[in-house]
Image (cartoon, rainbow, N blue to C red; front, side, top):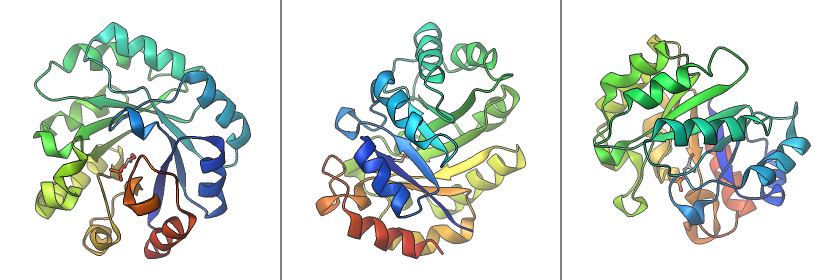
Length: 224
Ligand SMILES: O=C[C@H](O)COP(=O)(O)O
């Protein structure tokens, strides 16, 4: 089965995603950037409605790669009861201190997903490090949404390698980044665990616009 993650920014949008049977409901504020966060109290309110109904993920935001800053943000988000916490790993910075500090959280119920940015030459050799630190998953996204879709900024062979390596290390593996309907046929054979969307689900394909039910239904129908 091809699973779908949809990024939503409110309870109303979360209910639309649920109505169309989206597999993972991802809480995010797209107006604040690629990994813009919703405030923890808003995440908590949405999780209260969706707990045990559908897996919910949330991002901690576009944070600097400082271990304490990220650790505190993850703990705050974990208190909302969200299933997965997405953490952006930004280029040209030292990830190891952050990964080491977060490893102290992964033995409990907290499930972390590392987000790497395909348009920023991510270090894919780090996949094993995330696995060893107890992360639950890893995904690719894009930072600059004007660069085109994931399939345009990273060769298909590299995407295939990413998926295979992540799955080899027992990491839940997701692909996202300005994905449009046209990208789906080439990505499905890679057998990632899910494909993630925001822009393609919105009015006029603008990720900061409102969710468009018809667009969501069209994308969902392609993930058979
Ligand atoms: O986590 C997935 C992202 O929200 C995808 O957003 P996008 O399709 O606008 O790049």
